[in-house]
Length: 68
Image (cartoon, rainbow, N blue to C red; front, side):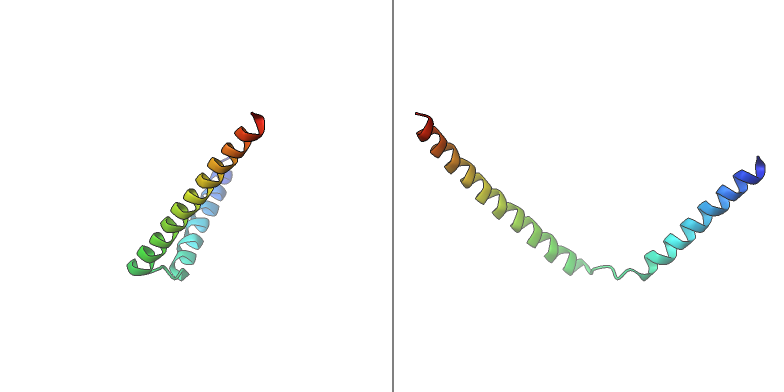
């Protein structure tokens, strides 16, 4: 049974070493890129929210006219 634990531990350690190695290869964005991308995403979310809200309001009015 002790052998099974040591095998699992060795596999776990190998996984974490490989993960650390792969993370070193990642090209992380600069603070400026991160900020710019965040602003773009927030603007997209806000614009999409406005468009969907207007569509929802329009369909609600249309449906209320049809039902009456």
